[in-house]
Length: 424
Length: 88
Image (cartoon, rainbow over all chains, first blue to last red; front, side, top):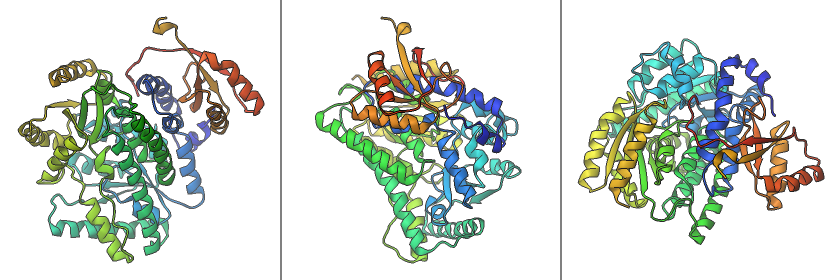
């Protein structure tokens, strides 16, 4: 077996504690993913990424740093990766989807903070995630109050640069985001020591668009009945998209899509054609949070689409590739990113429109609106989401949960009752 | 046969390059295998292993020999019931 202990030691990790995570992962992954019937062969690449999750990619990032490159850790789909890559840096998602990291976060954060923030802070402070150790700088944003304060605490331990995301979508807000991207370019240039040229930015807009196109193609396969890939596998792929090499990720996802398209042509799926088709909407599900999908898909239904930051919000809408000057490119970036409909905006009617559109596109039978505990923005917006779905005659249920296993069976009971109500 | 009596076989490797080499050869020969995180019972190191079925044990061993693929053995592990991760 590959032995990454020297690299983890060099990164200042707590090896003993980290080993508990390494010990848990294989069984969890086997139980949730490998136990599925008729998985596409193309999932082998993503199995590989998970099996080597704290090895291969971290080693690539360390190598990049040895060659003078910088690594930027990000937490949110509003941070324009294109800018980082255009300066010769690497942007990597910093995942906080495990209960394992929550107690570490609770040492410095109130217990009634959302598990995503607690786990992210805990992963850094407990020294149990190589990605959190490698990043030269973290890029935060102002998408919720919990995060805004967490950045100040993290900044005591590692440099955090915060992008100020507007909270409304008027023209002046798009212009403000344009300004923020300009400041971000200056910051990234200063940290990397590399000037961002229009050509480099154009190349990297294409690179990240290619990743988005691969994900769009993947999600398009899920519009079919029977669905050729499980929601769990699709969620895993989206989670991996945040930190894998973008070009390699797009190539592997496209290869998988070819297999899925052949399945569609043969009428082959991973669930019976009459299985209920479920949309999950709400808070992000960072790796390895597979809890709700696992419950739904071991209760006889298929998750066919996620309206979340670990779903369509991450990749819908491409950046316009036609501009050739930095000024126009920054405008194009601002316009694309401001199309994302996060609950931090008021009003956020675009998200309701998206949900109703996706219900039709993916022929959804029922929607599960799932908020992380203490994620007040998505919990509160849930009222409006459920109201709109009820008016449209779409069955909907709301679930609030965290990463722990304590409510696992209660949620299963509620999901089973919901599926029964769908009457399929 | 009950679930408790099902055994999986995991081919273990000194590094992921050897694992991917074998996976490529097995795929080309039409022998089914799945890349998996190495179970703790098989090794205390992280990383990939290849999960194969008992019927394919001999052809896999032959393939390892034929292509001089470096392996750290083949572990026989009893399959657990599907679980939710408690600490992951």
